[in-house]
Length: 241
Ligand code: ADP
Image 1 (spheres, helix red, strand yellow):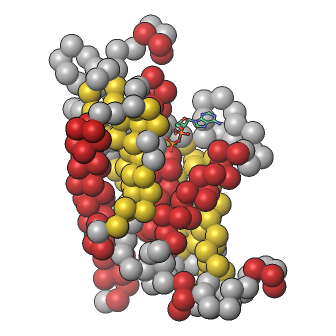
Image 2 (cartoon, protein in one colour):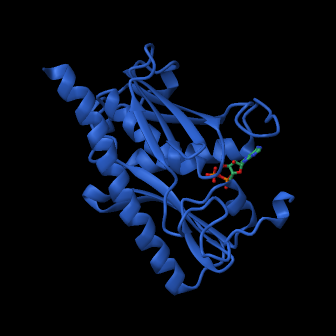
């Protein structure tokens, strides 16, 4: 059966991969995976796997980048050429440039940049495997890597995308659902301070679906942030002993 013929919602109400509509893919979070960066994290939602590496606060590479009152936060989102089924060009695409900005904005009011004037904090995001939702997995990985680097933040951030496929709202859309569905709603934020920092809608939802979708995403983001705390606690509690 070709991809186009796959039923996204099966007769039994489950999704093409056997998940319930409100079920997340299996989540994996690991921190401190790289030696050379100040902080790092590897996060997967199912097959979508993203590595984040943080460097800084450090001297900006060029003087004109210096901000006298705060650190310059830079984010580079990149998809590895081997991350998709068809080889992706390694050169940064318009999509990657835009996503770098969107992900940076998800942290702009979160990272306490005023504590480090005249420095740069660099977040490198490398999508190792793409199967939908890379921007939201990237936000979760960046939050963990920033925390692993010891960068002070108002709160931890996480993200997840809700979609609509064959008329049903579904949590954590994969590439097939994103490509064939009626809507895709990636959301990220910091529940501990009640802030949504990334919110995008592609496609069409009714106002009721939008409310239900945001509710579904927000509850999941709260759970993801609790997982982040657990991962950070288990590394740093052990190291503190
Ligand atoms: P997100 O990854 O945040 O959902 P998009 O909606 O733009 O962002 O992309 C959906 C999915 O489409 C990606 O997760 C990835 O699996 C796939 N995709 C995106 N860009 C490319 C590309 N250049 N080549 C192949 N697949 C891609």
